[in-house]
Amino acid sequence: MREQNGTADLINFEMTYCVTFNLANQYQNNGMFQDAINIYTTIVKNKQYAHGGRLRVNMGNIYFAQKKYLVAIRMYRMALDLIPKSSKEMRAKIKKNIGHAFVKLGSFSEAIDTYESILQESPDFPIAFNLLLCLYAIGDKERLKRYFTIMLNIELPGLEEELDDEIIDKENAPTSDKLKEELKEKKR
Image 1 (cartoon, rainbow, N blue to C red):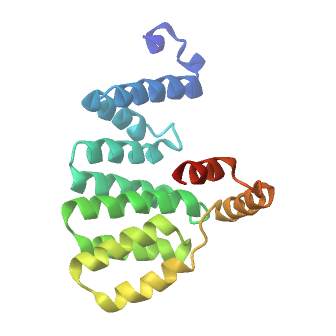
Image 2: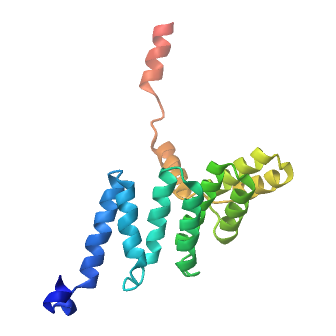
Image 3: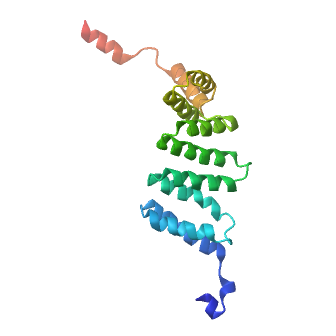
């Protein structure tokens, strides 16, 4: 329409991207998966949206929700190819999704490879736990032991704060417990 009126140069690509992305996201949030896939595909195929290819993660999430795990893995891998190596956290999240999809398919060996690659780049307790479950499922006791030891050495985020809070609570705890004393009195 705008091309016919000669106002094509007035198209605001960023605004169009935002509106289109929001529409696809709302379709996805409301379970209208095919509509969301169609809109995401339109965005991804449009070369004017430089980072549109990253929306393949969203498409992978939809396929995962639909239990189309092979297609989800393909979408995640395509998105992973577009993410720079410097974005380690984002790459780890996408790889985690790939690993979960392999678990859903029962392809524990592929899931193990994926989880191992994540742990090599950035130690993560839940990923290590998932890796242990996969190793248990295939009966690999030696690697299970090795990765269990590795998992024990992974720091849990927020654990130090919890321990500090417990120490403070114990220091501030009353020396006598009135409720316990009253219960002892009643038992006598």
